[in-house]
Length: 339
Length: 285
Image (tube, rainbow over all chains, first blue to last red; front, side, top):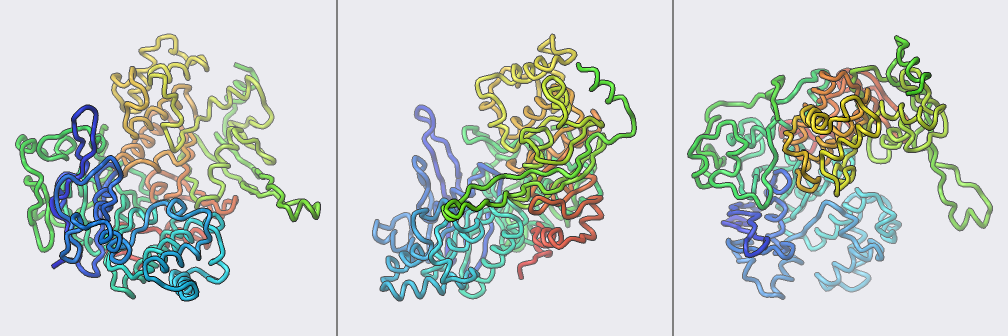
């Protein structure tokens, strides 16, 4: 049994008149004990919503309209108020893109960590403070005694993110939900936070669901990757397989769009994907990617979006399979493509 | 236009843009302790003795972390922020020595494209009207025929004419950024300053826009100052790169050379921290 199992998850928002806008359209995803799974996709793909659904924190007026979320075999969607509170406090931790927004600006950061410990673990004041100092030290904050008394605005973005990591790991959760945890940070700080998350994982055996738009971040941190597009997972597999032998045309096109340092001195156009990701209100019959896909066939407007196995632990939702047995991907450059 | 400007334009062998020892300082507010002690607080040097040149049809990347002074530098170049020292010469003409109509003409030749296209377009104006207005203000040739003028600009940024009657909110992020670029092109600039112009876009759209910048350089011979915090994005388009840290250019050179043999410690740190999309190239073990 997997630690986290998401099955046929569907998230809807009320649209104009009686119409429902479907943001997540039947997502299946599993995270094993201690495993780091990356959820990668462009804006509006539904990756953040999928992540939030695990905590039942889909923003209003959105709602989970179908599907299942099981944590350690327990049905999260059926939990009552107090059980849900327990689940959020002890089983999962969450960090977001904007660490300033997640911290209380009027409280010293140390007290915020200690408060978590008092509420969630029932610690007494002195014990909580001692533990909070230890946590600050563990997340790599120098001079914890001094920083304990700092307010969020006195700390840099990277430090605030470290504080957030300290808070969310305070009760040793078995699963960490990280929604674009390094997007707002400088690249050097990003590297430090990624290293810290890797260290926490090694020490605690914590599993993680990492949401990111950045293939670089996902490649650094994840064992397995799920690629989302238009509310569906279109491909999933081991991180190396996804990068080197992507099966789905979207994954391939997306990877070919990723800017790389190796391009320095070789300034050429990339074979960019035309068009833009679908808007929430757009209803695309059949394969959601078909309108932008160069391999689309006529039946693509009729096929169901369903992940089918294409290799060991590797599944793709493209029935056409234009790259089956094509082997390693090569970066497509030098072509002129009209948008 | 003013004669001094047109005359200097014709003189050959000067760089399109020459920046020399540019300085911008921001005064800091004195805290209570300083005010009681009647002490001055040393100003913060956001741009500190920056010099570089840019030629026609050249793309120069400016890299650096947040707070390194990239944006302040860009704004000083067209005097959106008044520099405190040094000089900025466009085609040999010092932009700091001119005002009024002459300054306006110099600014026409340097156009900026910002990160958030939604904020740089008037939400109540149609795309066509916004593009036409830019051309009309600067009295550009062809701007008397609105439809043809707008259509040519939309064509340059690879959008269809159908966009012209729409408002910014009806467009996608990528389309909006194309419109901001078209608006910059409406006044026939020789230099485009792109300040994080592709940073807010999805990768698939980002790649399209990078291709567009390369097309514009090729078709119009426009030079581009390409500011980005992402080294990989600069690698995709820039001929040369200047890396900024704390207001100074710490390293500059051909992009390939700087990336292959970075000499400055900060450049090395930036390159080391770059997350490669290939899991086999991890720095996190």
